[in-house]
Length: 81
Image (tube, rainbow, N blue to C red; front, side, top):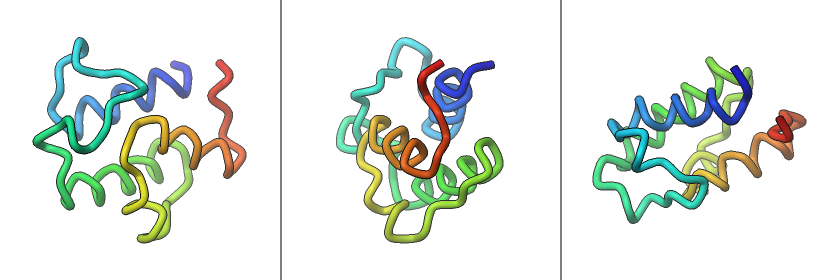
């Protein structure tokens, strides 16, 4: 499974979304379930899935799926799959 697919599944599972609702442009203000608990869940999921645990300030700075990708790429995790 590619990094994109793993991230997609992580976001869908945490935010309780259907596959048709996911996009790289999906942002926090578009999703009712993307609350403070989801931010923590995403941080934990990133650690479990990609081996990187965002700092609290990094986690709270995530507002869109693309922000997650940018953060992980900055830490050396490739999404060029």
